[in-house]
Image (cartoon, rainbow, N blue to C red; front, side):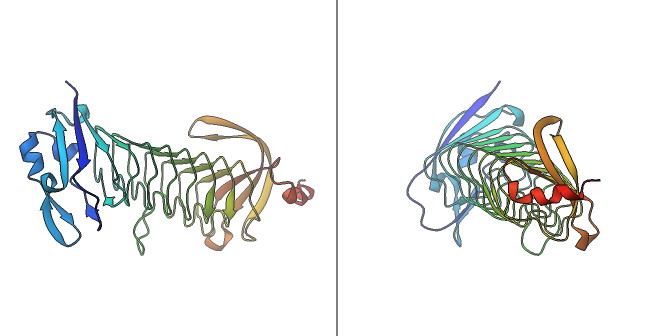
Length: 276
């Protein structure tokens, strides 16, 4: 039997909250009183979930049947859904850093905006944000070289810089625009940007696929123009073009592919003279 747990902040948070314990995995098998007693950090002070949040509802013993509904301002609350493997989290508002970090299954829905490092090092499952998202979507911590391995992230608004940094697998879709360096250090996986990007797509990428349907300022000189293609597939979904196709990054001896809309990038038309 499915269950719903409703969580609301007791007051406006002034410092970051490490809420990695707010996930179906942590709640499974516990009653409400046990959940309220789970340790959690408010800045450098150890608190309990019950001290910071109002919690109501019922809990299923099976992770897959647990739905956690967050209501209120969670912009200072980080790492919600960390390591979750099943179940569902719905954020009726905006949320802080590292949402869905290392998640391997289940679903997270954000009705507002999500901060940076959304789906950091994600392995599976789905995250869907109906507002905007910050920088480093699917990316690892600074200094690490293994990013998102699997799963799907969908952003209905805009996204920031370096989405898919060090990406190894999975799918990232941005319905709006994104910042600079999408797919930097990318090794595999797919990124689709339905809007425009600020440029430097695929810098230092070794593999994978980046699809841009909006405008791209320039293409890095370390990419080779290959052809014009009528369409491309993104995880089985056909996306109509036509597209200019580039391969690189040659600085990394890469074989990644960048697909750029020809219709929205007429300034790249000079590449067509290289078609044999």
